[in-house]
Length: 198
Ligand SMILES: C[S@@+](CC[C@H](N)C(=O)[O-])C[C@H]1O[C@@H](n2cnc3c(N)ncnc32)[C@H](O)[C@@H]1O
Image (tube, rainbow, N blue to C red; front, side):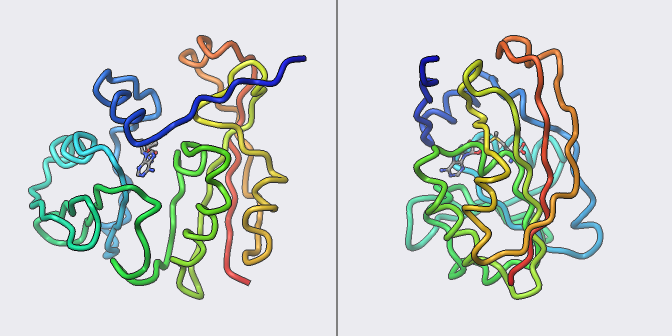
């Protein structure tokens, strides 16, 4: 069987997806984390995606340029949502300190395979000692659809994070939807892992 040809993704690739509205991953609901008093920090390289987020949620915001890297910071009026418009590989704990919780949805699965090691190191360096890191991955036959979003095996989660994190698999959910038919796959599972620092 021939090897799958993996698309090389980049901030430019994702910008085109947002421009052409090829964003089947997008969910317009907001979870109620910040209503519970948390500050939400996010990183997204496509500016229009961040503008859309605030408009969709009817949240007033301001935008400022970042000092040290190319990019901007979108801050909600109450300052409890702070979304960085920049390449996530340039984001580190100098910006916002350490995170108490991470929700990794559509992130590890949206970067190139050869960037995963650097990604896991960067992310792990962002965590406070008690941080709870929720990671969502996708499981499907990558010989039928090479991504993105890319397939990340359970073994790879352990290879990437296992040295520094305890990893518990919380659930495996059948997530095949109508929109996935065009991918040519006949099964798709979402795996959810809870990770904490060792
Ligand atoms: C599959 S989508 C998931 C978006 C969102 N996390 C969600 O769950 O709906 C991946 C997102 O990551 C952004 N992205 C991809 N590569 C990035 C990078 N290097 N730095 C920052 N954002 C990036 C894309 O623009 C896209 O909006």
